[in-house]
Image (cartoon, rainbow, N blue to C red; front, top):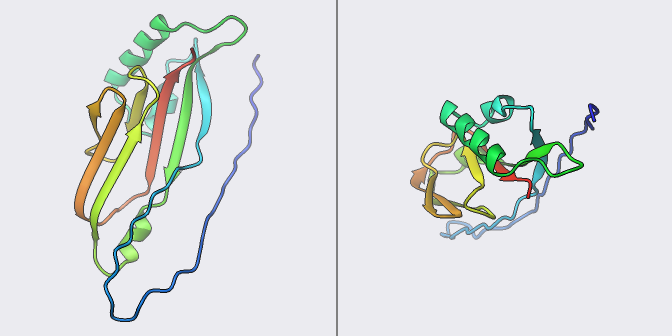
Length: 152
């Protein structure tokens, strides 16, 4: 207790593709991201964790409620597990025109999970599903997502 591991990992995927000259193509990309993580302890209000993901004071209250509902297990001080996802989107501005149809779907494990991002428009559409749909989309930032999960 009192010691923290400190490391960072970065993974890049790339590939070469060939497209027909003067032809139209439809590009559909599906991606299951690498998920990073940490945790929020019983004596931490979570403000530092949620700041990077545009979390509000309402969310601090939800974190407090979650901590009451799911206290730390014996032998650990982790109350909420942090699942972080980053994805490069702003390179879509390099394309010849906007992304015609963009859909982001996030499926949490439980309705008690808290999903945060600074990307405006992400809405809960089902107890564990969040979606964002945009047309003619020109992303001006990358996707940074945080999912807080009670340590059950």
